[in-house]
Length: 126
Image (tube, rainbow, N blue to C red; front, top):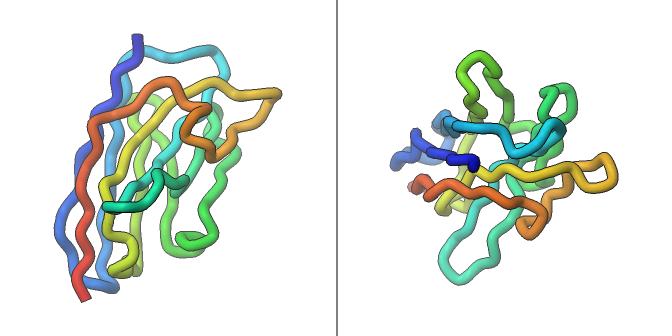
């Protein structure tokens, strides 16, 4: 069983920075994906960033490319999302997720992920 616990959400002004953390206990599989997703009220859950289990491959939603960075600390079993130059449209509940690779790939599809954290709220004011 895998448990994911997010932290770091806060209220911040536009242009500021936040770092979200996702502490994981257990491992879903030998090869797995870790992802950050977000969901704003009335919107579907969407990919923010994906990182492969070895940390060598990452993927970002176009809306956050160049502003957000996903990375991991394997010694701490923690995945981070560094959010810089945040915008009001980044306001959402942010979720960490874990799941297996499918056909060797990590896709930014929520249904591909088996394990989810409880979420952490990020609010960006203009």
